[in-house]
Length: 312
Image (cartoon, rainbow, N blue to C red):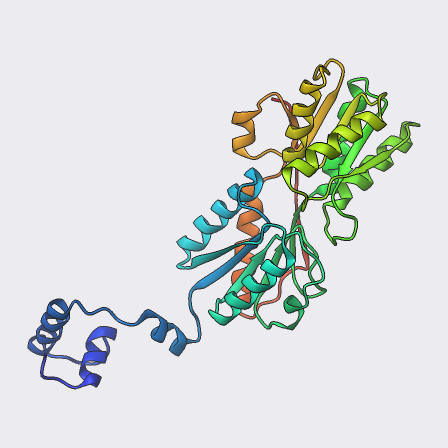
């Protein structure tokens, strides 16, 4: 339509070399009339980058993960990346499918916080990967909050408030995650204060009704329990809910402290004591680390960000 060669069109589109104003106008007029737009995928493949980043997380309806994904997307967008989100729903097969699809779409990298284990595909891909609170393999960098300090602060606060029969909840012990340090710190503080530590497993992969039944069982098995350190806010909220149904007064008869403290939790359950993870700082470190990896730069294996207590 413009009456010029493909090479000339390419030079106009990429603003390379000398092009007369008359020729440039012909090309732009043709572009406007044809409603033409360059093939972004072809351009990106030519440059060997797609400006796409995959995010794989267990469940974006979890308040902590939804805010974390939002913060990651915001930072990646500012750097010119778009995101593809894999909501694994704690299903390892679904996570494998998402991983394969993201690799097939030639994403530039992955940020992963899913809670499934033994997924071999992570070990065979050459993609830059950053993990959040998850151990994937020995060469994938980890971003984590100071889980041990968080567990220590939570347990010490419950003891200071007079609790003696404190139970901690933890996820599957088979999952390789720094989050288990929350329980390890709890155990250390309990022993230091001559109290007996007791762990109740609340697998992150359980559905809501299974968790409710498990919490009821926890109350039945531990009638002397006067405090719970729930290692995530979602479980803490459920424990609070079940306690109310059992006519157990919180915090008079049962003290509860959680871990995460997303902004939405502050609004929905402002009374909940919790260890606050700095979501913005974790997202910032994850994105900066991924960008370094995509450029072939060396990164730290583990970066730990500080936590604090939220007392409402």
